[in-house]
Amino acid sequence: MAKPIRTVDVVKKRTKKFIRHQSDRYHKLKTNWRKPKGIDNRVRRRFKGQYLMPNVGYGSNKKTRHVLPTGFYKFVVHNVKELEVLMMSNRRFAAEIAHNVSSKKRKTIVERAHQLDIRVTNPNARVRKEENE
Image 1 (cartoon, rainbow, N blue to C red):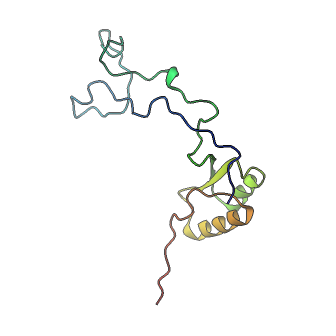
Image 2: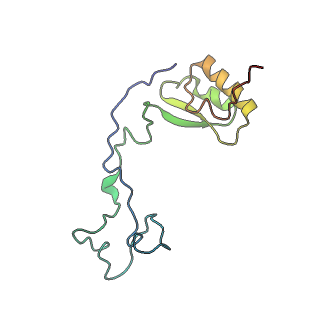
Image 3: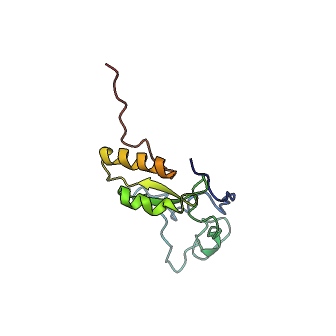
């Protein structure tokens, strides 16, 4: 199995989600973040003790942005031909088989990836264990 070129520790500035103002108060408001627009809004005016708003300072380090915990970047693959694009960069990118690929094609993609020494993030998806009867 291919090992990543370098493994840099991924440091997140914030792991908690930003939640929408008053979403805890009203069931009709989902927790998904929406920027407050009111003229008197406490969150928008950044009063002490209120919810924090997302801003550019929470961005990830450019070197570790989109890096998986294994140290690879994700590359979505739909067929064997797309997999062969990763042949020369198998230590930087890991293949992820797309959700709409059939189980029959998945087997061929996983076998070819094993031959090319490319890591697959989801090799066991849609694989049924054969019954011994």
